[in-house]
Image (tube, rainbow, N blue to C red):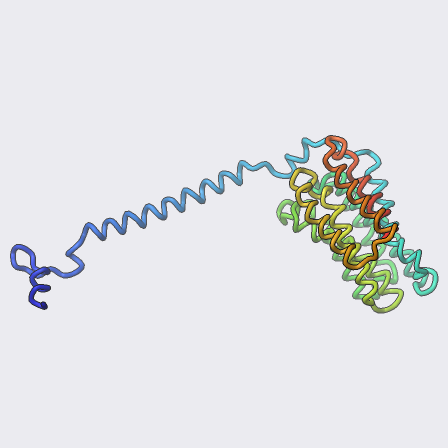
Length: 297
C-alpha cells in the first residue's frame, strides 16, 4: 500500500513530487476564489456607500413640507409648562410644600425651555435656529442665578434637558430618528415633573413614578409625528400608540376620563393622515391633545 502511494507521487521521469507541487491548478483556483470574494465585498460596500450618499437628508425632505402654522410656537410654549405644572397645581404640591423662591425660577425655566422646544418643532428639528439657543441661554441664566443651582441633582437634570435640546438639530449626532424621539420624550416627561416633586418632598415616590411613566408613553405618542412627520412617523405611531394603550389599560381604571383620553389619541393619530393640513397643524393639535389627555387620566 505504501508502495502504491509512492508510485502515485512519482512523475513520468521517476522523480517524486512534493505535495505543494502536485496541484498548482487547485492553488490558482483558491486564489481566484479569494480575489472574487474580496472584489464582491468591495463592490457591495461601494454600492452601499453610493446608496447612502444618494439618500436625501431629513433637512432636504422636510424643506419641501408646508410651513407650520404661525401659532405653533406660542401654543407649544404655553401648553408644555401647563402640562408640567398641571398635576402639582391640582394636588396642592405648589401651595403646601414647594417654597416660592424655588417655584418662580423653575416656572421661568419651564417657559423658556418650552419656547426653545416650540422653535425646534417649527423647524422640524433639522434647522439650527438662533432663537432656539437664545431661549436655551435664557433658561441657563435663570438656573445659574437662582437657588436651584445649590441643588446638584436638580441642576444636573435641568442642564441635561438643555443639552439634549441644543444638540437635536445637529445632523452629526444623528438624532433625527427614533433615538432622538426617545431622548426628547424622556427629557420632556421626567425632567421638570421630577424636579418639582423632588424639591417639594426631597424624594420621588412610587405613585409619582407610575404617573410619570404614563406621561412618558403619552408624550412619546404625541411627539412621534412631530419628530418624524413623514410616513415613517405614522408607522412608528402604531407602536408608540400601542405602548400608550397598554400602559393605560394595565395601570388605570377604564373610566370616563380614560375613555376621553383614548378618543383624543385616536383622533390625533387619524389627523396625522390628513395631508397637507397635518403638516401645518400637527404640533398645535398634539400639544393641546397631550394637555387634555394628562388632565383626564
